[in-house]
Image (cartoon, rainbow, N blue to C red):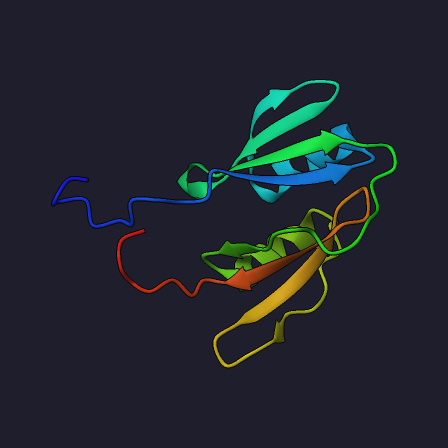
Amino acid sequence: MSKQDLRPPVWIGHVVMRTSRLEETANFMCKLGMRSIVQRKEVAVLELRGGTHLVLLANPTATAGDAPFDLMVEDLNATHEQFVDLGLEPTPIERTSPEHESFKVREPSGHVITFYSNHVSGQPV
C-alpha cells in the first residue's frame, strides 16, 4: 500500500443474490445506478462504486425477502426523488437511528433493498 493512498487496503469484492427473474433484476439494478459487466443466461455481474460486484444468480426457486446487502448513496433525498421519477416506488424516507435515514425499494423478483444516507467516516475510502 502506498503511503499516499490513505484508503483501507481491502473492500468487499462480491455480493451474491439469487433471483427468479435474472434479466429484469439486472436491468433494475442498472436503473439504480449499477454498471453491467457480464450478462449471461445464468448469471449477471454488476459493478458498484469502489469496484464491488453484485453477482446475480438465476434460480427459479429463489425466495424473495430482504436483500442480503444494503446500499449507501451520497444524497438520499435526491436518490429517492430520482427513484420516484423512475417509477420504482420507494418507501418514504425514515430516520432509522441517530446516524441513519433510509428507504426501501422492491426489485422485480421481490427482494427488498434498503438504501441508507451516506455515513462514511470522512477518511479516504
